[in-house]
Image 1 (tube, rainbow, N blue to C red):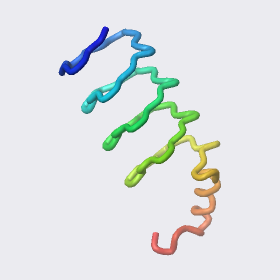
Image 2 (cartoon, helix red, strand yellow):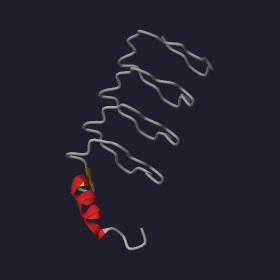
Image 3 (tube, helix red, strand yellow):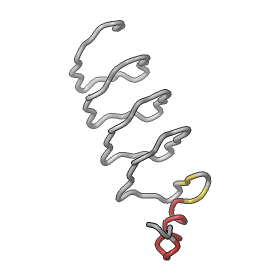
Image 4 (cartoon, one colour):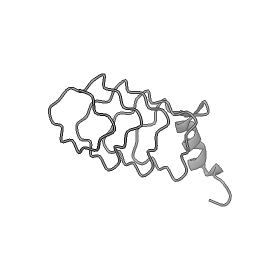
Length: 103
């Protein structure tokens, strides 16, 4: 199915849309629940204001991203790195009292 230069609201349930392609598409305000997006690739994407809950991000790669105001809470961080440094090591160092003086 091809939808081009049109505006529609879709209610999709129990469907297989694997392999679909989206280019210059507005999905703002969409609601996704119980969705398999494994193996997806995103480029030039506005995800400001996104909220994710109960999500598997194992193997996630973030490159050239604006993370201003980003928050990660109650997460499994083993193996996660920032600029090649283990996040668990960074947090352990911080918690040992070596945090920023102004924090």
